[in-house]
Image 1 (cartoon, helix red, strand yellow):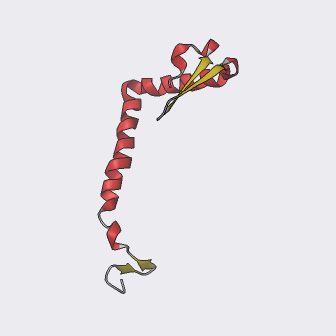
Image 2 (cartoon, rainbow, N blue to C red; image 1 turned 120 degrees about the horizontal axis):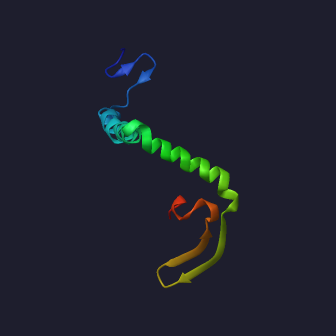
Image 3 (cartoon, rainbow, N blue to C red; image 1 turned 30 degrees about the horizontal axis):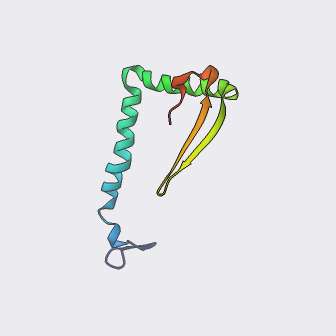
Length: 95
């Protein structure tokens, strides 16, 4: 290092020091915990996700949207739309 905190290819931004650990804890460890949940019990949850994706891929063309209604008040809008999942079944989606 040629200057305090500076490397051969540029300076280190001092305000970022200490943030990688927080970033790791917030993102990588959270992702690792989610993966462990999907991988538990021989990956049964992962298998369910893949099965759901295949069902959606195969049957999406049978789904359709119906009437759309909008109610407006002074401070907000409420949107209501009919969704016909048909062959997908009522548990195939959530809002």
